[in-house]
Image (spheres, rainbow, N blue to C red):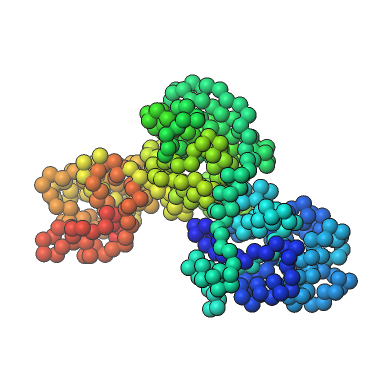
Amino acid sequence: MDDEQRENEGDLICAAQFATPEAINFMATEARGLICLAMEGKRLDELDLPLMVDRNTDANETAFTVSIDAGIEHGVTTGISAEDRAATIQVALNPATRPAELRRPGHIFPLRARPGGVLKRAGHTEAAVDLSQLAGLSPSGVICEIQNSDGSMARLPELRSYADRWGLKLISIADLIRYRLENERFVRRLAQAQMPSRFGTFQAVGYRNELDGSEHVALIKGEPNALREPVLVRMHSECLTGDAFGSLRCDCRPQLEAALCQIEAEGEGVVVYLRQEGRGIGLINKLKAYSLQEAGLDTVEANERLGFPADLRNYGVGAQILSDLGIHRLRLLTNNPRKIAGLGGYGLQVEERVPLVMDPGAHNADYLAAKREKLGHLFESESPCVVLALAVNVGPESWPTIRLEVERIAQTHGFSLEALHEPRLLALWDRPQFVWKLIPDGGDAGPLLQSVAALAATERVGLMRVPTERMALHPPQTLERVEHQLNELIDMSSGGLIENGPSLLHWT
């Protein structure tokens, strides 16, 4: 069973060397999914089995190779029968088999496991290979997704019943990751030194990932082996353009600096600095993505145009670094809920999400909007506050007139206006031309909103009601964006706003 934030599916897994015709038939009739052969890359290279596609756009990066059948010299005919498929698997496992003995395409679908197994990719492919290796068997496994009898995917409740019915063990990939983390180490601590900075003095500890040679750093405030759990932690992915050069296209540097300041203020905590530039796509590809953003794409669309998923980051190395430091329970400094799920899969307990709040500048409102809408980032955020947003259908030459007219309307209804330009707020509202904080002077917002909505130039009007001004400038995750007609929001008997409505309203 994998993480419910990922595929949320269960697979039957069999050590490949025990894949008999009976086992294959059971998978075909009782699991009903695609029967695949998970193997190490070294063996697939020996068999000259390349990846099925050059550009993998699958959300989970499942690495299919070309499909295979064993040759007729091995007694395989059509390749589809349980006996033929079992034979093909055994031929592929045999060290003496040469590439010419396999026909392409076929009815067995090899999968290329990532080096490092589930510690590098929390997938069923890697789980099958890892389980076989841990059992002292050939590093390969046969896997098949489990479907219900109606063709839908079996989820955890159905999988529990399925395991009970057939006398099978049910484990999660998180269980396997936890076991490997407790019993294996791929990250080595190689150096440490005191590092004074303008944020405070930290202990810098250097690590090397033995799987790929990459180097990473933990910046520790406090005694490394005596940090009080849950520890305040920031898992920060390298951003050369932002962290070092101060790029205004992203909010990476402000997030890093805010994390260091917050940890310094608390007196202890850790920043794990991971060398995975550009959400994992690398520096050159990130610069290519910048070029695409100049042409009008957002940060997610640019990654996808280059053939990458929106987010390629992997937190297994960071989890091992925290484990090496003796940290298992943490308060995570992040606006990214996927990071919480990612670390949870590696046996760490995230007890609290601590939001990072900063105003990085007007250049990245579109970037923040894409992170909110497409990557699910949560932008959190001190007197009660009502914010009015107005999008108009006329050009910039008419905006001064509209601004004066709205100010006149506000004054008539007992309000003054304060213009707001915070990029997070603009991103939340899809960049309207005007955003104001309403400063009440005995007025009711209902008539004001009706008058603004009635302007000929009005295309879209928005309202946000939050308990603190800080929440308005840094909108929290609890805000609910709802489309309404204006008459749904106004109490027609009193003319005022309907009480106890959603915090965030948006209507035409």
